[in-house]
Image (cartoon, rainbow, N blue to C red; front, top):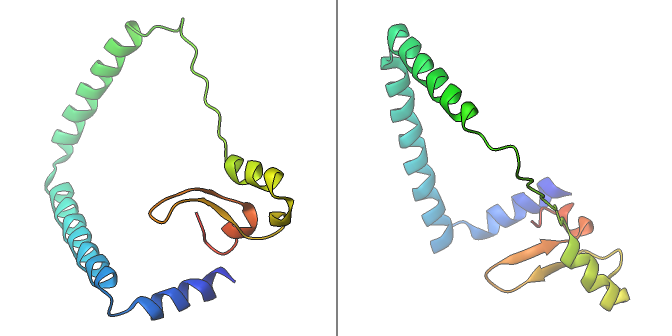
Length: 118
């Protein structure tokens, strides 16, 4: 159960340096959000209209110079490396597993994702 795992991790990490740093970062983000909301409230409808007109003009310029002769190809290799690892080691099939190192995960299989591993 994903919520249960989150709760356990939260409870076990309270008081750690990492936890305190995350709390500090959350306060900074909340303060930034409050400042952004205040700035948003200070913008008049006239200013909004002027910004919309400037944006529309910029979009028109970009559209006129757009090159549609290029093709972009994106491949989403979601859980690819985990699948390759499973092919190399069939014992890992249907077991939660992730591929990566101690500081970063490249991917996790779908079984691990159910536990919140990303």
